[in-house]
Image (tube, rainbow, N blue to C red; front, side, top):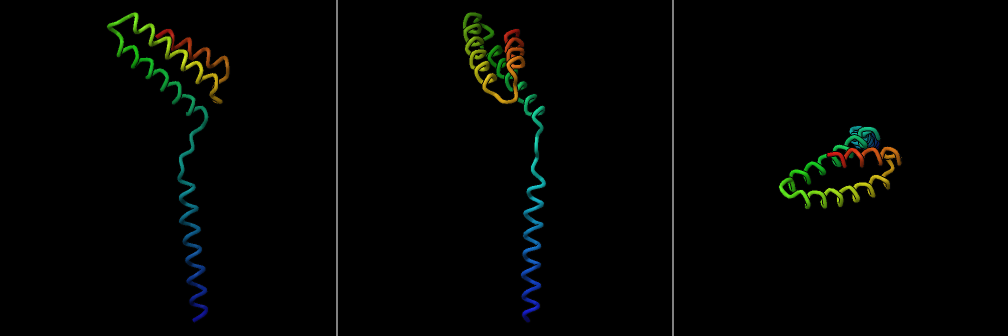
Length: 97
């Protein structure tokens, strides 16, 4: 009887170990290059949304673009994925939209 209880306890621990070990392996890890590309795409999409929203009013469009470029520049310069040179290049690219 004690042997059966011992075997059941060991089997339960083994099951729990493999169940939780499998959960941690299935997590999706993105490389820093992929995260960087996603951030760049996000900034480009947001700039295109601003352009689309204010396309009929050029003065307001210019104001909103400048506000967004300032905000994006601040965020990019504080982001660990971008160097100073990369941040400036992305801001110039966004400004050219």
